[in-house]
Image 1: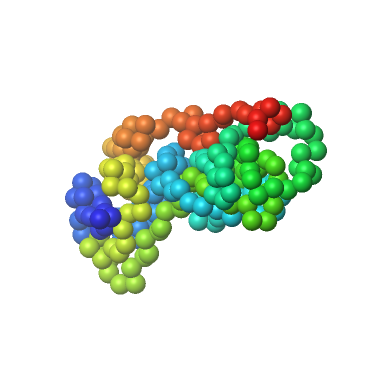
Image 2: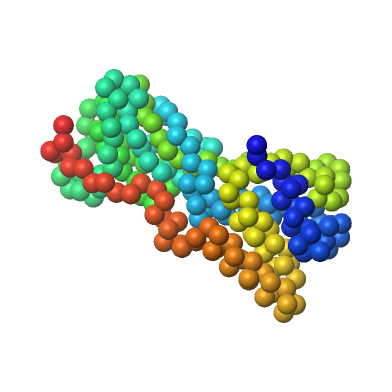
Length: 227
């Protein structure tokens, strides 16, 4: 069962000694909650990874559906022989077959290419024909919790955490970090804020290089030699 946002807020408000939501209001808690879910996925796209079938549009360049934020893998064709799809290097393909984007389209994809700077875009070889369909793994967008129409304390919060349960502690650390950041002009709270961000980073195992690493890993295949 998903963890309710109010359960996260209950523990946060007890920790910051503001269980009546006087110093930090419910809207602040909700904003920090929603921002925290997105921040976790920025560093850990695999926290909400989904495997699904995806119809391709005609051509080489493809994009993820709007509900997804980062490609993690292109697994296989879902029609015909259901051939596996391997990642290749676009620079190699461009060098060996400069006009490959103008090749005859096919419903059977052999390779895909991905650039970390365009997290929601990928290319396929050969160019896709209408009817091509592949299985993707991608990071889904979290669902924001809504601001309650009435109520002023954590008990009035509605909605659940989108992330798996194991990320609840990290989300709580992020929210506390954000709350103390509001009072960062006071030395004690500035230190508390930074300490909680460090705890948040440690819980996630944040390494900015790791953020990039969670995605297509680079399994170069040579389109001239592979069947």
